Each structure stands twice: as C-alpha cells, then as structure tokens.
Image 1 (cartoon, rainbow, N blue to C red):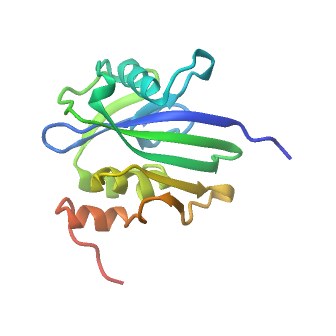
Image 2: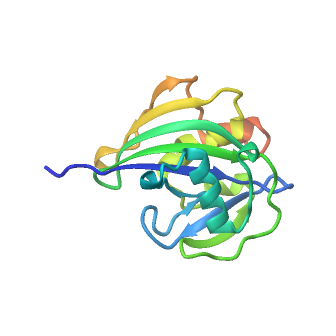
Length: 185
C-alpha cells in the first residue's frame, strides 16, 4: 500500500467586470488538459499561510498584484485520493476586484475568460464542476467546509462539515439567470 502525499493549496477564483470567469488550460499535473482557476501549493517550509499562497500564486500566474484584503475565503475543501493517492486540503478564495486584462500564458497554462454558462461544456475537474463553481457563484456569506472522497475516480457526495449542501452547477447558474434552466428528467 502506498502512502498518500498531503498537499495544501490555495485556489483563486477570478472574474471580470462582465461576470466572465478566468480559467487556465493546464499544461501539467494535476488537472493536465483541464480548465481550472489559478492557484498552487502552499510553501510550508517557508511558513506560508493560505492567504500568502493565494497572493503569491495569483501574482506568479497572472502578474496581478493583490493584498489579503482583496481576497475572500469562501470554502475549505478536504479532497482525499484525488488523481490517485494524493490528499489535498484546498483553500478557495474569491478575488473581490475584477480583473479585466487577460493574463499572458505562464508555465502552468494559457488563460481565457468564459461566460459562466460555458462552464457546462468545458473540460473542468469533476470536483470543480460539482462543488467548487456552485459555491463560487452562490456567494454565501459564510465559509463552507466540506470533505470529498475521490478514491477510485469517485467524486461522490461530499460531507458538509460546515454550511448547507450545494446544488448542481446547472441549477445554480439557472437560479442566477446565468444559464438556461436545466432539462427535467
């Protein structure tokens, strides 16, 4: 049995003045070939905090300088066995101010702005589609904490440790008039 590696990361969700979201087409693992928000691993050896990590990653990947006051922590996600044996503890932040300039490509990937409704057809990580983007769009006043077991490629139900359960991305976008209403089955 292999021992899992424990990783801590910060992810920053960014939008522009038009409500489009900024995504990066990943050139490397994790999430190779998928569209994701910018972010990366916390430098524990330097004593970096999740806020410091978010600010550093935002600047490294997009060139955008922000302060901790520009970030809003909206979720903490425990993701077990993602892409194998890795265990991720993710701190999700919303950039409070719009970013209207498309950043140049970086070593992790190229950027593009998308309308929220386009997320429904983009190749994005299953956990992002099922949990993270709905949380971002709902803009809850409280921080949500959840734990997801991804063992065996499963992205099943999350355990909500704090906060109410999350609706689907399709229903969330429809309720905010950002996408057509979902088809009934």
